[in-house]
Image 1 (cartoon, rainbow, N blue to C red):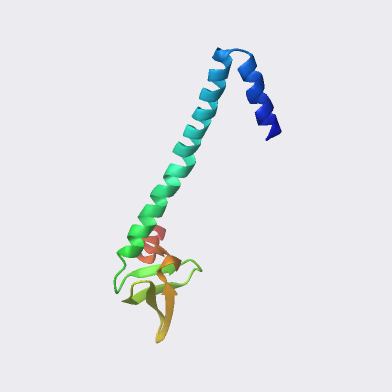
Image 2: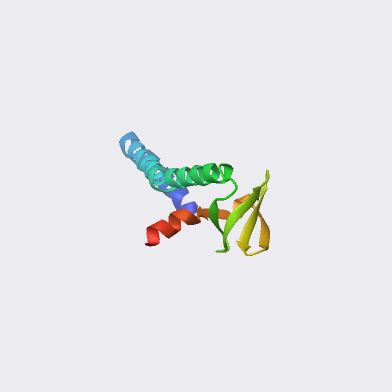
Length: 108
């Protein structure tokens, strides 16, 4: 933090051209970071939220823990998964991480 403050004070003392170029460079770094890191992550989060909101009975899904199952019931915050035979698990919607039917078709 002190190095950044020292650098700012040095650039202001060297003239306005160098000071402006420093701020433009800092702004460009934040813009690049936003374009390559923050924006794609937000897009992915929106797609996952849309997927979770569109869940319906019969969909094959994968939980964050790696459990494959078929949705038997959908509620506001939870989902009842049929895992195997009569085994059913109630999980939070936020634990659903992927569409299992899409994973099976890609692996073939």
